[in-house]
Image (cartoon, rainbow, N blue to C red; front, side):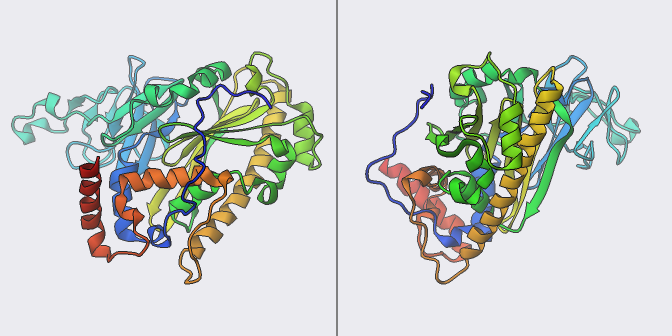
Length: 405
């Protein structure tokens, strides 16, 4: 087995094999806490610098009532702002992506902003009395770029800077050359599932189900697949292909034609790698292409699966075909995971469900649940509290935890 250069954490000899209780998957009051404690305060990947090649190019990102726009300014700098006009709060851009030529014009009343977010001028400015333009620029959002990937968060949170947080992945990202990637023709994808977001992450956080549930992946890299647990909510999963001829059509032809990348270090040769970041996102790379994907909750019972696809520069016809075949394998895997998420989520409402009993191969799922319990101690309660007591109980339990520390 290839040695991996990651500071992996050992699995404890004696650990509690139970996951979160069922009530945490369908409580509106708990979901409100997750919005506040998890999603708005943790880094979210929203795109890559290559998605914004020219000044005025922008990406939008919506999350649980917050709206962001990421734009490249005239000076070439990428910035993130609240997608919210300072006049009446309208979206200053509408859609997923676009281009503003020279300025941003609010479609409601025509307030004009420079590409750096500063206010150029209000429509009919004399009707506002004294209006200091420097006080009415678009509100900035905290943003960082890591090897080309753009991350933002709407509120301060417990995670370190992106550079510190993702430092264990830095050498791999540099070896792959992620700063130089390019978007594909149809770069983004999205679909909604009638499940709680945690049910999606529970499936994605463990490889125990791969041999039976994912015949394509099992055919591709079989027993070489490994999940690794790192500090600070990071994970890394990897599988190597090519040693055994695939039985399935897509796998067999993919393994045959995928061009080698001799510039990569040994552990990345012929590998599919998945870099996970708490609470809800993965950046996945193959020798032929890469993507990021995450589950964005819409409410406690509905989740949007979405991501963006990229290719390596100077793509040959052979590599483009390999990327297509990898997409076929990954598409089937995603469909299989979606069904598993639905089955898992619906079990949470059954009176027969008695909780999880986890394998060592599912320790990543347990770590994710522990991360959520640390942020929201009320999730440690096995019996559902009254909905109107959840926020109060969480505050009390958080204070008790701090007192014990």
